[in-house]
Length: 207
Image (cartoon, rainbow, N blue to C red):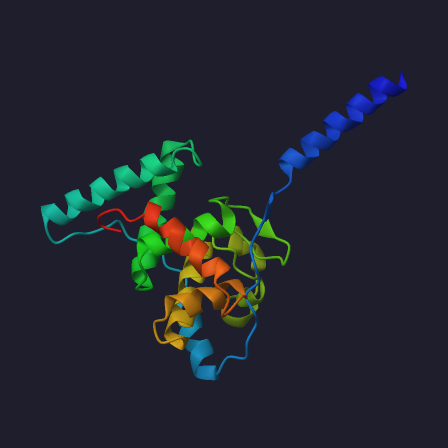
């Protein structure tokens, strides 16, 4: 085998490995902070596993508004998630988990766009995982200790939304400061401003 041929094969093999490996996410790092026992207990209860129910609506108008939002959001996400059923499953889970945590769905989608680019298996240089780039220490603090589960769709969204709600409560509703804490860059403008900009694209009725 010639040196040129060998080099070509090695380059091709390297490209295959690179394609199979999770792409790094350009995210910051949530900072592990001491939690009071009452806070830890409350957060643990908040992430307790529970399958999201099918959306229920009091009126046909609410249901139609939700379906309109789902269709519009699915169209906007098509470039990043080609499979229709995967898009719908993802968006329904985001819709449910954001509302469960009393968060705006558009805010959560904007955060996911900035944190992971909607990549399920994204990993940051700090080790944050999944769609909402949850740091593994949260699995130990308020979960069952198995950080591998942070790649599961609903588990990742549940943790991410509960953590963001915790930071919002700690910052008395200040989204700018809460997002900074979520990213590990509290007080700096780059990350919150990026999330706010991304949120604008997801401000669809019913979100």
